[in-house]
Image: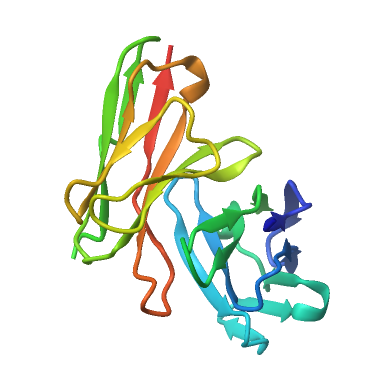
Length: 115
Length: 113
């Protein structure tokens, strides 16, 4: 069965600190997709990144970076120099690359960035 | 393009009442999904559709029905609402033929009293 675990329920940091959100996944598929979404207080889901299982290259986008390691089945998300606007719930998700293409979500990590 | 639009955005129901949530997408996507979000549980799949006229059960289908009569619309029905169905509902669509993510609606906050 597929599963996504976000062990950190809530994290609080002071502005300008770096913070890493952990994501561990389980799947028997050899081809799959991984995602990160941000859910700000307004409630919508904001797409951040998609990663194909064949692409283990890490990615950086501004203050955001992602570390994908198949050997440990992890897809961690780091925010550098956090800002108050980063306060949100962050979801990691796993998707099949065949069949239903459905998402399996983690339970989310609530990040609070304090001024 | 509007993307994925959910109607309504908020609703309060009394126990036993029925209602239909509408999801409309204008991206010609084949696949559509209904999820519910509850505190501490992430998003869980209720029902999904892989094409017009087809529907299938997801992880938590009990108490819900769906229909996909038109490709662009995916309806989620609650025949007899229960307080346990108080949740935020998200609709999503996806094109599996392209290497893209799913597109989510803005969510519907439903309270059953």
